[in-house]
Image (cartoon, rainbow, N blue to C red; front, side):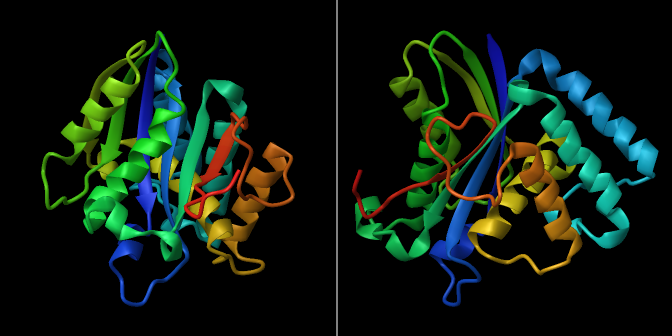
Length: 233
């Protein structure tokens, strides 16, 4: 079966900032069968027309006036059940030992990208992976990531990994929205009574959770993988 994976990140500067704005660097991914891409894009277009809302969809743009639009997007994600799945990795920057990554913060970032993707790639499937454009010191990062995923998943096919501008890819934008919701709980940035809190609560209601947070490995619809850099079970 052919799948597509759309990826984005939140707080990627936590590894380099002198005054971190949060605790967790988060990388997110939205997974769907390739045959569903056009249908999903068409439905997002219908939601845009319904609310007369245009431009890039982003977590940072959630506001009281746009809340109905973004609630419909969360409802759309829920409506597909396990045919549309979200997974993100939460990396506690205070526990990262850069010596394990040759003191190369960019290398460390892409090692965590690998961890995000590797464990959801299943045998006998084909995957195309799309990442938001990111300025890398080493322009070969995605090529190396693709090669590592290929080597560790010999019974599946990594067809391609490419970077695309999120402003032109609505499914990456939907990933941004879901990742923002997850990050807001993990990094404790929600303001009580805000439009963003209302959006997160709608998502939590759909998922049957009191609060978004780290999930078991077996969670399939909305998986938040908090990597344990200090070891343990």
